[in-house]
Length: 222
Image (cartoon, rainbow, N blue to C red):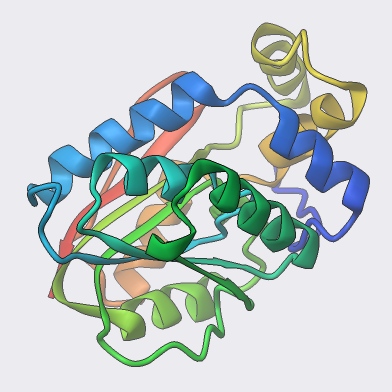
């Protein structure tokens, strides 16, 4: 099945609100578990991390609670998403540990080589220009930084995409179900991600399918 790109930014307030209210507790907690294991830093260690496509900010907030020594920057091009993230971090009592930035993940204007950790959950299927995205991520990462980017991968056909929506989003809102379906059709395959990384000079990063719908890009890049 050919990729069917969806909009890069979730600027619609109703879509952003539906996404923020969806139940991602289990998958987000599993992501944080994997990230902490990969980074192998203590909870009080001074770690600078950037979350590209942070959405409503749930993952940085979870990291901040678990690793109080970390300082995290959440980047998203959607103003509604960043507004939701700011409010959530204030409610969680983690606002002082988190910085929120409205910016395109492929053009953040963040300083060169400034982050020990590059993370992302569900941004890759929004990326229209993979070369620009990977170049920017590489620019802001320190040499030897730990990377973990998790996303959907594109299923074989639309029937399989509908089946995944029915299996994993049956209890979600109609808006979120439609968004999930579009995201599956817009996702990259593991093979496409591998080619993107090789072209970006990020050969040291690994690509691995981890569930029936998720793929990880992970490792350390020098």
